Amino acid sequence: MNNLLLSLMLIGLTGCFKVGPDYKRPDIDTPTHWRNTEKEALLNASDHLWWEQLNDPVLNKLIKQAVQNNYDLKIAIANVEQYMGLYGSTRSNLFPQIAGAFKYQHPQMATSPQYRPTGDALNLSGGMNWQIDIWGALRRANEAAMADLLSQEATRQAVMLTLVSQVAQTYIQLRKYDKQLEITKETVSSLKEGLRINTIRFEEGYTSNLEVQQTESEYQRRSALIPKYEQDIALTENALNVLLGKNPGTIERGLALDKLKLPAIPAGLPSDLLIRRPDIAKAEQQLIAANAQIGVARAQYFPNISLTGNVGQISSQAANLFAPGANFWTIGSAIATPIFTAGKIAGQVQAAEGLQQATLANYKRAIITGFSEFENALISLIKTKEQNQKQIERVSANRQYYNLSRIRYEEGYVDYITELDAIRQLFDAQVEETAALASTFISAIDLYLAMGGGWIVQEEKANNIPKPTDAAFFP
Image (cartoon, rainbow, N blue to C red; front, top):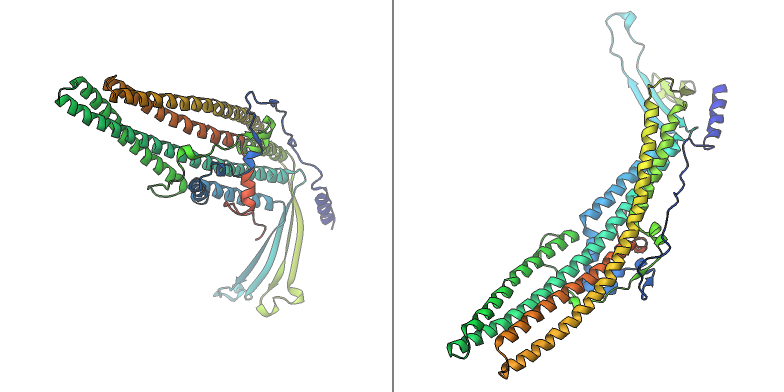
């Protein structure tokens, strides 16, 4: 009875305190503003399905397929499932562990009568073992397991954000190569016609062989780009299919690159990234787990107290197994405390504290990396928009140059070399303008990736994206 009262008193003390430091978010030197801003920036833009702003139904369908079928995302979800199970297993240590047993013995008859057993024996029992968490070791372990689970959940969200961005960017690259191939084929067609005309003029003595050879050189040069762009298209399609979880093959097309709409620029303070970026959330959860493991290690210095009990029925006959006199029960407690470990516990505490310092540095590094990536993406978007505008103006000027040179050549004021130069410059301007436009879209997507986003939570609530199951309580 005294042992029982002592055990109950210890149970009452459970939860009063925990060994080890409680987690407190470190002080962070957060910038008050971004160095570069845009006037048309839209607040909370990354909380919505930003890729729908590009206004391409095919891209929307591709992203939906990727979210449902991508294998990297499936791996990330499975990892969350794994850590959900580990958390459930760790959490179970806070509760009594109860097990049942049934035992039946049928003795083999001995030759000598004095060694013969009395008969069959049946034993039906249940046992309980409960480690009393006086020092908070189990609660610290549970705290660490929860943080590990949330860290994996943040990893899953990071995979989701990266996947959507990669699908959109790869699709942009694909449409860029499509446009550049189209420009190249038009230019090659024009050069082919010019080569035909100049060959006839040379044969009739109206022009020199120099114009023919220069035209053919430019024709062959641009023709060689066609298989290059076709190769780029095929490789990009295959890369996109990997993201979609599909075998290599062609990809459906939607709007042309110059018909897509640039998404709004997301706005937010630097402090928003501490909440929105999953990599920062992951680093903080790792820090929380490491901080809790210090308590787990330090708790080993203190006695380990367990409460045990058994209850059951024993009989030599199955019919009497539940008779009033066949029952038995026991209850007890056990205390184990370290006396000499040759520095084993001290070493584990030192290792836990060292890990906590490493994860603290990793957390702060993740924060400044997030700040840097967002501002880099913002600068890139601003400057690529400026470059694209200059390329648009360059294409306009070169198109006028080409039109004028063609007119003057047809009227006999200039030779074909002048028109050939205009074709060459217009082609280069169009190809580079297409690349600049694609870079602008990619920079905008990078900006959304750097900001993070709340759209994942909204899509999960709507059951539009796969998510792991919760940890089980029973059995």
